[in-house]
Image 1 (cartoon, rainbow, N blue to C red):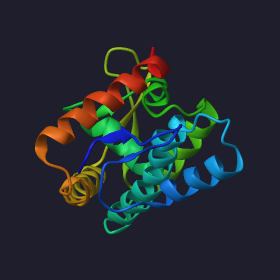
Image 2: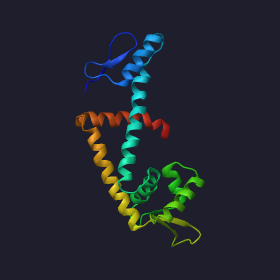
Image 3: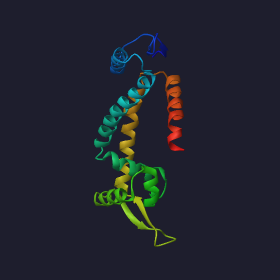
Image 4: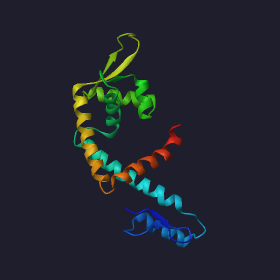
Length: 179
């Protein structure tokens, strides 16, 4: 993979190698609106298109293990919490970035599927915690293994130093949104 270099005018393109759909989109905009500075399209259109492909890959990995993408978000938050794999609904809301009504609905559905249970906190019976069941743990572990295998395959086109650089660059872009 070659670093993008300026190629005259306002266009940035890889020094060689195959062109993608974003190159064609940017070229069309440059032809129609040469006054525009298209650099953001080179980056964010690729990020957006890649996100769509990743979403499909993730959904496929999860489906193989009977888990919906939203279920994976909740199950993985519980799994990452460590033994006894439980969190309050409020903590789950913070980790998954959904509303309280959405989380209540999700928990209800996951309880019905045997993936989680509601349990009273041992030190304060007024506090309810959501706990991963053995079946929930089995599914999230299997889905996570499948996900990492699929994503590792997608990254295999990049040498290891490029993967680290990409990760660092994306972190720099993401931090302002999460501050």
